[in-house]
Length: 237
Image (cartoon, rainbow, N blue to C red; front, side):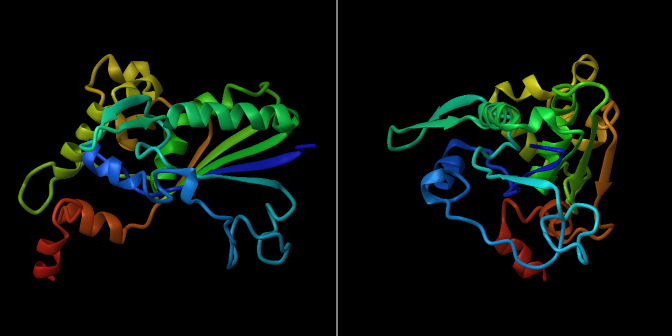
């Protein structure tokens, strides 16, 4: 029986082209064929030791593997160079996982924490209200996005490179707008509504955001935009 439960969505970045996504399909970030059982080491929210994890040590915990390249938001298809169809099914995976968990007892929980890290943190922000709406009002549901607050800022060249990258993700996955808030879409384009700075304006569920002020990933992959040219960034260092 689920008295208290925490659901965690895995991170793993995004892919913005069919070629990029096609490459991921041969890895743990693109297919369950390559996924192996995980061993959680160290102390944290998954720890079952009351000393190190006094708040959640005895909660039911679920770790949702990530393989769609769009923070569990995509629902589209693309054609790889070899003619193979690439399926983007993150949204369907999210729906299927949550649906199965509800059948297995999650629907009986009295306290629920929906979490995620990095790209999974963005998924937490994207799906927070939808997840919360699946429970009666008397159930305590909260969301926790860990290192998932990605910024739309100019890089050192003066360009909004990360916006351009997210724009390709949104355009490639097409149906991403299904998970975006309608009040944001009424005034802004879908890409802007994919950024947490806009998403949080519409979220009604209690949300805790944890992000380093000096997020090393965003420093190198956003400010310097190493996501597109890691060699250039190495030279800059």
